[in-house]
Length: 416
Image (cartoon, rainbow, N blue to C red; front, side, top):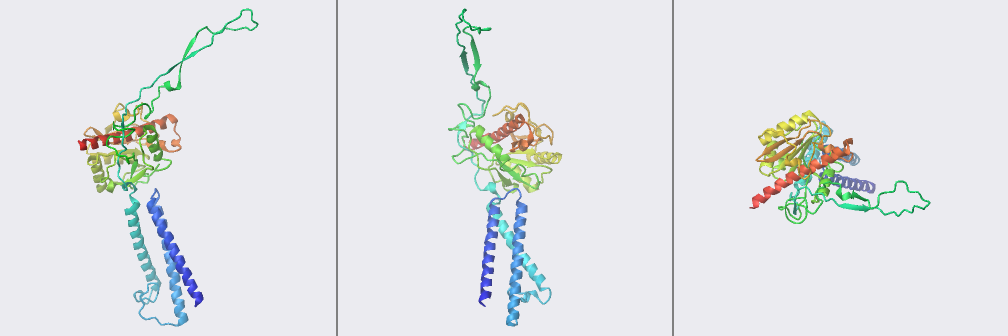
C-alpha cells in the first residue's frame, strides 16, 4: 500500500507540474501573440490534449486494477475517470469517456483562449495613442555653407640653390574648398528647429503629452501577407528611422490591431499590407470607415504580393471612403515634407508605379503604395540599391508625419 501511495503522489505532482507548465505557456503565448499565433495555439491545444488523454487513461487503469485486487463491486459511480460510471452505460465505455474528456478539454481550452485574447490579444488596444509633446517645423533646413581658406606657403627660391623647382606654384595662391558641412544635404531633425508642429520644446506636436509617442500599427486580417515584415528586422526599422530622423519620441515596438476595435481607437495611422487579398467583412469596413471619419485616422496600404491585393485594396478603399482613388501628384505635400521626393521608390511593381490616394475634406485619408514599400525596410532591404531603400525610408517618414500632423491639427481644432 505504501508503494501505491508513493505512485499516486508522484502522479499527482507530475500532473500539477504539467498543468502549471501548460497554463504558463498559454499565458506567455497570449502575452506575445505573433505572426504564427494560429500555429502556436494549435500546438498548445494538441500538447495539452495528449497529456490529458494520457492522464485519464492511466487513472482509469489504476481504478480498474484496484477494483480487481480488492474484488470490489461498484455501486452507483459518478467519477468520470472510472469506466464504471453510470453515464458511460455498458457498451463503448472508453469511447464515451474519450468523447467526454475531449469535449470538456476543448471547452476549457476555448475559455482560456478567450480570456487570453481579451487580456492580451489586442496588443494595440492596451494603451492610449497620445502624440509626443513638443513643437517645431517640417520646413527644410537651410544648408549652411562654410568657406575654408587654404593658403599655400610662400616659397623663397634661391637661384644658386642645388635644388631644382619644376613649375613652382604661384605665390600667394588661395585655394577655396568646402568643408563637409557644405555638402548641401538635408537631414530631418537637424538644424536649429525641431521636426513637428507646435510651440513646445523639442520635436513633437502641440496637442501631445509627456507620455505620448509615435506608433506604427498594422491591421490584422485574413490574408497570409498581413504580417509580412512585421516587428524586429522589418517595420521596426522604419519606426526607428523615423525617431532618429525627426527626433520625436517613438514606441518601443510596432504593433497590430484588428478591424473590430479600430473604430474605438484614436490612432493617427494604420498600416495595411497583403500579398493576395484583403478579406474584410461588412463590419470591418464599417469600423474602418468610422476610423477615418470619426477618429480622423489615416490608412497606409502596401502591396506585398500582386494584382490580387491591388484590386482588393483599391475596391475596399473606394467603398470605405465613398470616393474614388486618384493618382497622388509628385508635388503634393505628402511627397514634399519633410523630404522632397524626386520620384516614387518602387521595390517590386506589384500594382504599378503610381501612388493612389483617397481624399476627404482636403485630407488624404488613405495612401496606397503599389511597390512593396516595407520590403525596403527590412534588414536586407530586399537586395535593392541604397538610394532606393533610402527613398523608401523617406517616403515612410513623410506618410507617418503627414498622418500625425493632420491628427494634431484635428485635436487642436477640437480644443478651440
